Length: 351
Image (cartoon, rainbow, N blue to C red; front, side, top):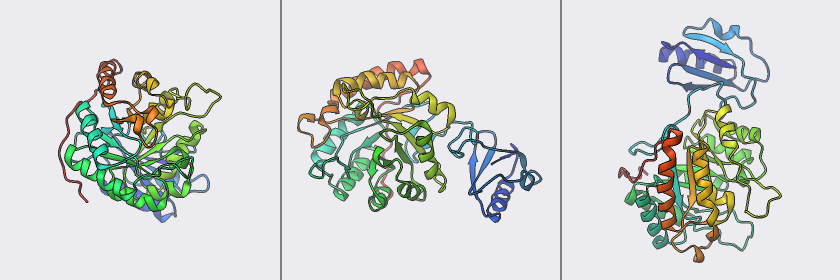
């Protein structure tokens, strides 16, 4: 159920409707839009009588939402969600492309700072780096943990880049939320519902990667788990799915970008590094991702990929990242996008 408020509804009227919903034992989710506020209702086991809300002050309409992903649906919010980061020009969603770049894993301060300097110079607004690595083999490099988070915090201080890194369980989630700007939930955890709900209670932007074999509905329902806990700053990410193809690590499904944008107001990024697993395929698929309407790119960059402790084969050299940015800057205007380049506001980490 969706309660649509009148354009001139006051904050008091909106709060009164939310209070009324909560008094009935349901959850109210206020979603401000450009023209009016919509209030989603969750927690109801069945149909709710529209008459419970139609006569409340400030209410314009009460609409039944048929999709299972209520809060992620465009039925609740027509305008695209834009996630902003106070103190910077960085954003995800809207007219500007978000560029997230960095190594698969933080290996040392020297490695991380060298790569951060180069991707910042290339025009990235966000720095990605793994602190905790869920690896297929228990003997593979698992990440530097808290030390990596501290290194990335110093990178934010020096270069003004916002930090994106993955949490792999509830324990690491708390640490990532404390040190990073965006919590990444990886493909293997897309349906870890306990982790999703916990992330939803932390009120920190969440980058949710599509599961290895997830359908579109399953992907959006995973986002719904986060949003149902009150966190509406969710960023979706296509990172390839498993198919019979053996010429790439995964099959990058760019068709999901327009499909998501038709059904949901949430921004969607594309990860051509994990999507292909091959360095020479990353640039072509990044170009295609921007051309098909993605809200940004997350890509792996390493200054010595042949010596990388993880995913070196899919990591761009810094000069290749710069080349990618130059080419995407030419494609962006064709799809009515802007690609901010090299403008970062220096701010304290705020810890």
